Amino acid sequence: MVGPVCILGPTASGKSRVALAVAEQLPEVELVSIDSMQVYREMDIGTAKPSPAEQELVRHHLIDIADPAEDFAVSMFQRAWLDVAAGLRARGRIPLLVGGTGLYLRSVIDELEFPGQFPEVRAELEARAAGVEVLYEELEVLDPLAASRIDPNNERRVTRALEVTKGSGRPFSSFGPGLIQYPETNFTLLGLRMDLGRVDDRIDERYEEQMKRGFLDEVVALTERPGGIGRTARQALGYRELLGHVEHGVPLEEAIRDAKVRTHRFARRQMKWFRRDPRIEWIDLDSSGAIHHGAAIERARSLVGETET
Image (cartoon, rainbow, N blue to C red; front, side, top):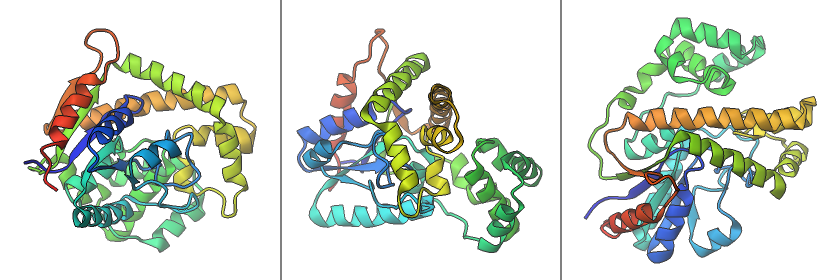
């Protein structure tokens, strides 16, 4: 018997498809999303959230648990997972985790320690309005290791790293020693891997489909809702670029192109993150030149079938 199974991999690799197929075959299974943006309500199309029909077919967890105006943190996700896990155990159900947010996954399987909040320091940083480039340069001086792990354009993460470094007196990177260690775990990690050029194609195809389904209308609605959309949700792939179009007049074609490019880069960072973890069992999806999820579904099904309830 093994512990919970997690299906991971880069965005657009078909993780949700595999997980849903397994859950349909095993009625005792419920899906747990490990996605930092699917936690937000009203952000459905752009996050590739499971459809209402899919959520009706199989119960999903850790979706739609936060308001878009809220700065939802990984420590909050970690606590939410513990509540979900306890409920699943009490009902004799089996969790099947699925997602690509590496830090959120590690918070679950390795019970990471997270630093506290330092609102006065954060307020001082935000009041400076120096721009993300200046903040990132400061982080490179104070904590070069943290800077090397953070997207220089992710203002929320850069500000958070500076907040902790200044507020705690410890480098932000010192709170994550577990990130460079891979201890034994009762979780089974199954990774989906495909050629990154094919991942790029699938990302582009998904954006085209999302735009047809009303992604732009979804972004407009977020800007018009009471409370608006917070700084964390604003960083979501595609949303940040379309917000540039809606709020600042960036041409739509340029916004979509930028969203595709940023998502391509994100997929590469995901794979770089996951490749470090020796605990992952990889399944190559395109060894024959085409995308086949059948082997991944069968392997995941066999692993979940051995899971302890």
